[in-house]
Length: 196
Image 1: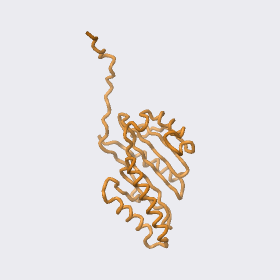
Image 2: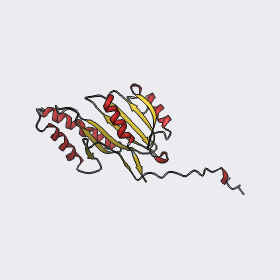
Image 3: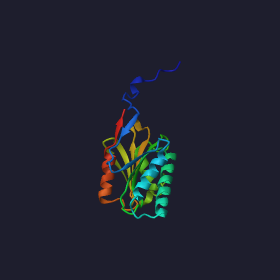
Image 4: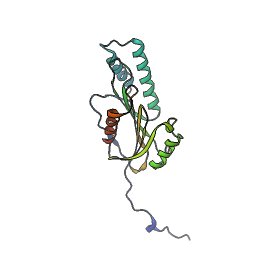
């Protein structure tokens, strides 16, 4: 006969529920593409065409921007992307600033944010890791790994109960990720809340 397990040694800490949704405050100027809808390509094309309309934008540049944004959205979908936000930052129809919101399933990254940051720092989990500033920050939504590059800012916010991460991938290819743009992206990330 085996001894019964010592019930006093079992942790009695409440397990945080996996959130059923999230809220994120994004300024109205940012155009939203819902990647969970079948018509996301049409919505994205509407944005690209709208940016070229009434401006002296070459058809070649419009095609290049469309192809790059479509490829970014498709690659994001393959990695769990749900939303794509776009902000026109130039008058010539060039690449907009963007925010890609993705849900990373558990098991792909370390549960501990400091371990995840160390992996990013070493470049093991990110080809651009050694060239970016990696830190662990506390957002109102919980701990997050922050990776800042010259034109990108990735915020990997840990889901409650350490069940994975939500990634907010900001990019500002024309104006760079510094000054007001960096502060705006940090403010958007700081607005993240979980809905149980």
